[in-house]
Amino acid sequence: MRASEAAVCIVGGGAMGGAIARGLVASGTCPASHVTVCDHNDAKLEALASDCAVSTARDAARALAASPDVVVVAVKPQVLSSLLEEVGPAVAGSLAVSIAAGTPLGSIEEQLGEGARVVRVMPNLPVAVRRGASAVARGLWATDDDVALVCELFGALGSVAVMREDQLDAEGAVIGCAPAYFALMVDALTRAGVDAGLPAAAARDLACATMGGVSEMLSDSGEHPRAYMEKVTSPGGTTAAALRVLEPALVEGCYGAVDAALERTRALSRKG
Ligand SMILES: NC(=O)C1=CN([C@@H]2O[C@H](COP(=O)(O)OP(=O)(O)OC[C@H]3O[C@@H](n4cnc5c(N)ncnc54)[C@H](OP(=O)(O)O)[C@@H]3O)[C@@H](O)[C@H]2O)C=CC1
Ligand SMILES: O=C(O)[C@@H]1CCC=N1
Image 1: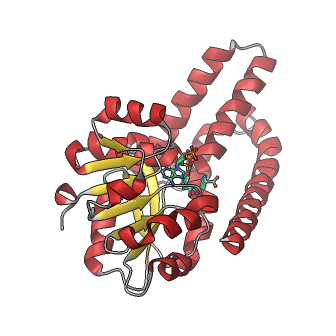
Image 2: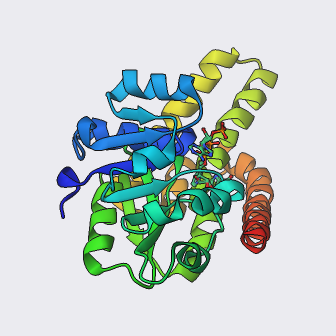
Image 3: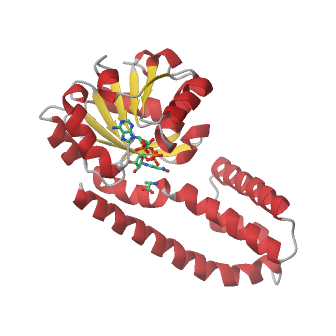
């Protein structure tokens, strides 16, 4: 089945579920009439209906009774199990796509029952503007066609890589969380800029523009980041002085951040 033909139900219309719905419709991958978003929150549903004309429902059980082809489960990991307890039988006939951090395929398959087709995806927030990055891992009973359909859906929202499930947690700790790491970098640079005498709004705008430009140059050229850094770093210049301070702190910070995210992922996985 092609993505354009699939009826897609997204359970949870929050940050990620909303971003996926908006991205799928804006990219033309799914007609709005094929997408339903369920959430308890009327304000989120109204915003989604007005932004991208998807159907909305407060009651997931009722929306799932229509037997959608794909159910994207986009609730917090802490409530996934109780949601599946409630609507599991209705999901079991569809292709279930879980984006929950740290919830193993095995525990979802166990709740949905033998034969349930489940695919795990770890996307990130820029799927909202179709510049996200998602890792995809197939469940025991998911078919090649299921994986191809999920890759088409998330491929419309940015880059996709198929991985083994045991790689997905690390991908989440690095790439799933990275939008927050990058936003923190913009904020930290803005604060340092203000401290150095720059107007806050200009510092933030210029930092954002630079991040977008660096991202485009690195991905278009495929150049190694180190080679790119060399082009900015004049011998005996200002960048060399800055990097001498920033590099050890940032590298240590990144290793520590990913370790902490992984530890939390494992804790969530044990609770599930
Ligand atoms: N945020 C991110 O950047 C990323 C998140 N993820 C994963 O995505 C999932 C969703 O995260 P996120 O979007 O941030 O969370 P949000 O809290 O923003 O969204 C979840 C939404 O689901 C709603 N909800 C909860 N239970 C139900 C239910 N039974 N029926 C319908 N709606 C329900 C919540 O409503 P209410 O608040 O009223 O309970 C909320 O609006 C998580 O599992 C997370 O691990 C993965 C990658 C990146
Ligand atoms: O913070 C979280 O749990 C989610 C998972 C990856 C990014 N955000």
